[in-house]
Image 1 (tube, rainbow, N blue to C red):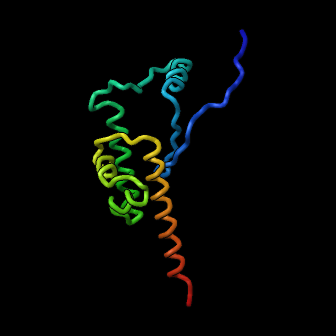
Image 2: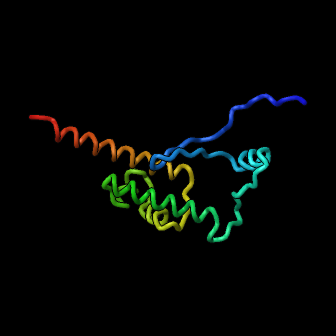
Length: 128
């Protein structure tokens, strides 16, 4: 039996609220599940109580917690991320699943806000 040569996997990595995720093509995910002899739970025809709904709720909770910890309103986070405030609201209410680009914009905006807050605290603590 001949082994296949290893190839690089086209994926994106993102960290949200301290949890690392890997985003990859659905066809590649399905192939990996098939090879591992695992059922693929990702499906476009998921009921309202399926895995996508749980992911939306988890994402919403983490986004709200991190946004509040950063001291940002929905409108301010949206402005910094370059997206519409309505989009942040829908994500936080679990009404939509954002794409990778939107999640990345939100993460970068919150990272920048957290860094600015940390710098501000350091500046306030320095003796005059």
